[in-house]
Image (tube, rainbow over all chains, first blue to last red; front, side):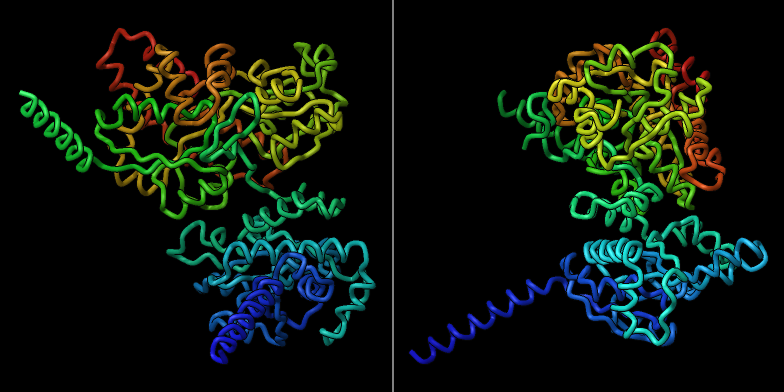
Length: 267
Length: 342
């Protein structure tokens, strides 16, 4: 009797645990660099965007890109934020990283670019903070992560001072509102320019090496996820969708189904 | 006697299987467009095996996933539109266009009360109008190309509203959120039947023989085994002839395998000839398409895509078929079409 009760209690506890884990969502350990450019990630944590996307994210602070890269390599974290230059150099060196989202850059960069270009473009663009995923990061989790970052971008576009107030305690330096620009799009052509300027294409490297490490498909899927969800009907989101170069959702998605004149797609 | 017959049949089956087992294999990916049935004609009529290639077909639900499968080495041939392979090539993927599967096929739909206004023979009727599009779809790219050819500054004189799917475009037209929408087969047939919308134009009226879905393959595999790819194209050329001369059986094959309503297939493929299943590589069409993508500002820099088009394999395949059938009218037409478009 006692034994049976114990078994039942164990089973109940296990079920409760499973339910709790289910409620918490897919677990992800995400490292962030102590840099204002990491704001999309921090805002996604404090504003509940990760949870909204069904993720249970543990944010881990790093002060040096090398430590974050090492943590990615050892599997301590599955994703993280890095300056674009460090991320691209790691990709060029053969690390199995994927850039899944862009991030924040000092606005001064843009102004300087206008004044100095093409004198210093590589050094300036290289400071952009991007989000990278390790090769262990599965596609579904990556899409949800990027969807949360896009939600942060929309937030920052509309409520920047309030967002900085929320995330400021996680950063050593909090910039003035309006001094950073954010772009979650891991746009191939933007990073290709930096890749070329830094001369990162090495002899013997396949011509699509950079493209294989820039996951625009995840970004496009994340945009689709938000547009389909319909709970974020926002001009900022529509602008992101307009600028993204995504392969169209071509052709009837009717695998295994019959398209009929009478009722659209039927099983 | 029965036993002898049975044994002969068994031997024949075994011999066929053994033959197939020895043939070079090609894994071919495609999407279920109404005009993508040549693969099944070639398979069901036995052309692939007769030409000496064992083809396995894989249907995909999206072009992006299909191209990714080619890139990952899981497919030897892909048929996933024109935009997708061009974008991948422009980002360094080493694919080569070797043939085609579909020409034309895009339509402009509107509400019935707007048809008279929008169906004039001049594209200028679209000036000042709001058009629903799926960005970078074939319809979007070639419509802008057609507007440019007509001397219309399409960036200033036409407003585009982007949607994620053709179904969303249809819904926007239906609600009046846009004046017209650009969709592809079978969505305009579905829109006419289910939503009461009308086709104002087929884009081919203004832009004949534009490229739709192209056949491409990893360049290293084409270079390593051109003979197998040539045999593959030869089978498709023979399938095209069958498609042109056997309507009823072709409609059956397309319907059965693509799982698309027979009326849609018959109407779009034969009755109205909105799209054509044609294996020609259409080199000029691919280059035009790329220019339209650049001019529309979707891609910020040019790329030498002409280096990634191989018309030779198709020409050799066509020549071999013509040589065997010197008086065949369809093959002669294909040769003329090739000369005009490559």
